[in-house]
Structures are given as C-alpha cells and as structure tokens.
Image 1 (tube, rainbow, N blue to C red):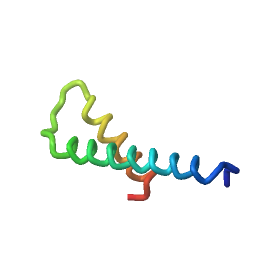
Image 2: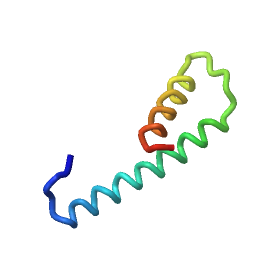
Image 3: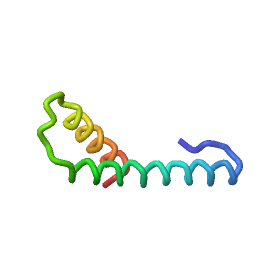
Length: 59
C-alpha cells in the first residue's frame, strides 16, 4: 500500500521508524542479556514482544 504523501513526510516517517527500530532492538538486546527467572512473568512477556518486534523488522 503506497501512501500519497510529500517526500519530506515519507522521509520523516522513515526516520521515526528507523529510530524506533534501533531503540527497540537495543532494548531487546539488553533484555536478553538480563538474568532470567523473573517470577511475575514480565520478562517472558517482554521477550515474546521482542521476538515479535524483531520478526516484524525482518531480523
């Protein structure tokens, strides 16, 4: 689906998405290096979310 937007808007959106991807990727890498064993399951949910995010970005 191609959006009919001015080039500046497309560039801005791409920049935002790229920044978001870098932020999420570094967040996920940091998470994966943390010790596991969080009893409340938050870490596991975060790990699953990170897998989904990385799949979405084609990693």
